[in-house]
Image (cartoon, rainbow, N blue to C red):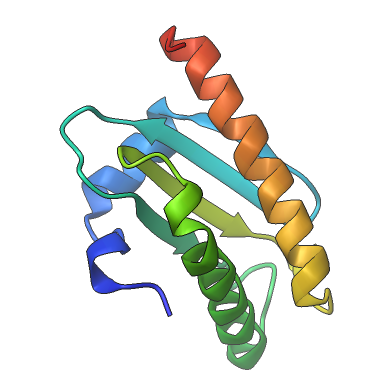
Amino acid sequence: MLPRAHRMVDPALFRAVIRDGARAGNAAVVVHCRTDEERRAPLVGFVVPKREIALATKRNRLRRQVRHLVAARLETMPSNIALVIRINGNAVGLSSAELGVRLDNAMGRALRKWHDKAGVL
């Protein structure tokens, strides 16, 4: 489970990360990320659109799956990162292992794009 200290709950921060951050994705997930020097712990928010995944049980299952995958990766994330993870309809039916691979791929690319954009080494 993702600890409360790492959950993004501020709508303004969601908008800022999506609007100003770097984005990378694949058919299953899209990751928006940005860093902030004042942040002390990684923050993660999730978006699971009802338009793409109509059944609430499937949306909730995917959200729990990805939340668990992110919680396992918290220690390897930079402490000042903010992520918004959008889970697409193509993620339905994927195993946790496959979803983890796609999530890692998208997070890595988004972070590299952010570093290129922000000029961070």
